[in-house]
Image (cartoon, rainbow, N blue to C red; front, side, top):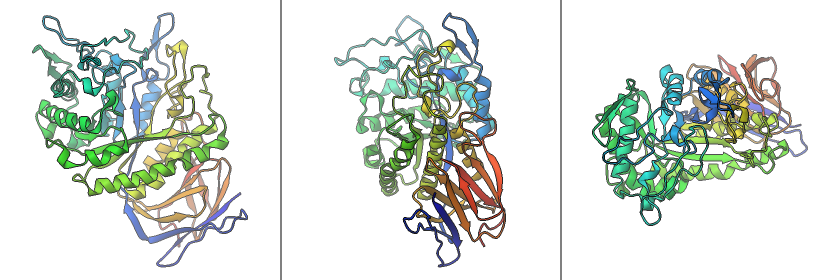
Length: 539
């Protein structure tokens, strides 16, 4: 068992970390006189429109019934108190993600229909916007009928009648076959969609005004809200095609709501690939003055064996090193670009386990309970690594996925390993409670102190908080207990811990509290802990 000694120092003194493993010293250096960065990092999450979050569900015999986890799940989101929460109605559920599923034709009413979009959007906005928290909306799925087939002819754009039936074949046609290459029709669709959301009304292609009676008038940049354009380059976009459409669509959306003061901020790239960062932020490639307030990237870790926790440390933590190095290059490219003020939002961060959508898995998703602690520790590790680098937003993915639950009308799995909630109860698992711990204990404006750790299995980050207190985040990357000793402590510290003894699969209160009367504590496997003091941590 490693025994790591963490010591804060003044001036030029050094701290030490000794590892009692027979491998020599493991050094940690904390210099409270050196502020690495004033934090600008928001910890948050994304919500995807999966059926597990619906208000009602449909049994195989056709009977509809109230979703037993609905209220708890949405309450769990509201209780997080997160900002910049991303909402993605995505393409496997066309009736929940596309507001105009059929091409408008002369002499026939348009197909604009928000029947299956509105309920979950309302639940999401009630839990975020309604609590005065900011959001990121991403209606990424473009209407299929805007795209032709390989011969640029109108294609088959069928979709299931059942809004809860997953249909991964909805996205058809490539950007090269956009029937209006100018992207004018695409811009018109998104303009009407934003007008509906912000103003509660829009005018369709036939001049008919549709009124919902409810608009989210504060969904604008002044209140911190954001619109993200597209997701992961669906329709085979190249970066130049994306830049073209961004420059056409975004100004049209702004005009549709009456100008910039009524419009949200805008986010580009949509998690496509980090290779897009440099060209997208090259001002000479843009033909309009469309604002670029954010760029978004995605990263999911993995491992070699779904059910063997012994593979988690190397897979999750070790596998992220290359991503972090690429991200450093992306930050440098942003800083050197014509848009140095653009913020980086990693709005899909998490773990996707091998064979995640295997329909043979049972109600536990074929995941050991300790997995949830390991995935939560991985997110905390990313926070401690990326906050000192200045990354602005870290969005953990996703609020709720599930294995197949046929009796609830969910015949196919939707990435159960990516869920922050227990799909049986709507309560938070360890991933959720780690996020809640970080939201509660760290904030934009904290002074992040120079912290280096020589112990390979421990991640640490110290901060002087905006409230004047001191905090030390500790993350155990190992599937075994690790002892950590904090040298120089002359006072009792408060501990808040998420570990296997506080929560794994589900809990109403997954953060346990303790006091540290001495200078040593044991971090259980994949534990995340925050040691804090209202006054100076180290003497």
